[in-house]
Length: 402
Image 1: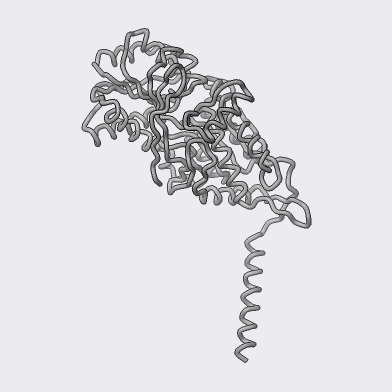
Image 2: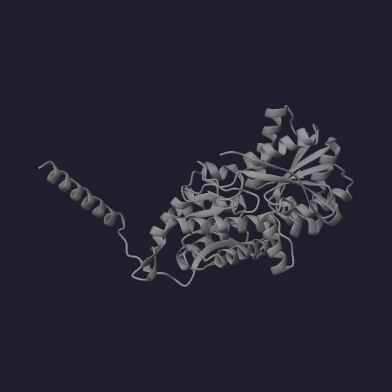
């Protein structure tokens, strides 16, 4: 009798689990498409048009690598681009097109924090996982369950910057120069906070500018009059950075400058500034000097486009690889009766979000190991470089734990 009851209990449990499985999968699998499309919003027109093309190149090298390795369980991927035009309205319109016209399952958004803020409500309403390159801490404070940061946030970047200026370069007379957007304002505030709390230092002057400004004379002369020996700068636009560096030298402002990652852009900042970029420092995401996958990206870009890699290509490249890892782990592709099938868009978006939350120790990126933390940030390290003879000189790498 005991054996019969035990057998009956096992059968009932098996039936319950089977029914639960069917209940959980309350959708119909669909024939897999020829390609799995990943959405990307870049600025191909407007003030950041150069940056948009540079980002696209990083995506394309990543796509070639993913597809050479078998795609997503045998289905190749491709990017679908929409022009955000570098504006809030344009970026929101671009994400709308990716969500509703292209029906993408996951999208990658710009590295401009103000634009990331603009699309956050739409991502939440549409319930689509969005990976963004903006580093402003205010984006993390949104606690948007559908948004994932793919670059190291500015709280960490600011602490790295302040420590390097004081402990490595030995400066105490420091000025700030920053753009008036969310990114620039946040970087200035967090770096100033780190300087004051950790070293008792406050900036001698803080100069703000609008993105796209062509004349920085007033700000740079104010810094020169302050007696500062070092400038820390937070800027969203590498084209602005190149002009700033040129005008610094024209005004005889011979001081150290430590900038955020846009100052390390060889393709834009250094190309515009030329020899006036010599000797500046940048807290950045990428340098080929680290070798390994960093060198791979650089070599592939040289072969494909005849230009070296930099941070503006690196983060789209790395982020595309992270997305591919999530697509593989999400189980959105299944073989049924010998045919490849795919989840419907709604369920696939949820599965991809869960897979992103569970990214751990993904080390196929260039200079970083990716893992998702409580703020849904995936990156936690930076490198410091110096511009020497128009190239990056590697100074040090800093990794922060989750």
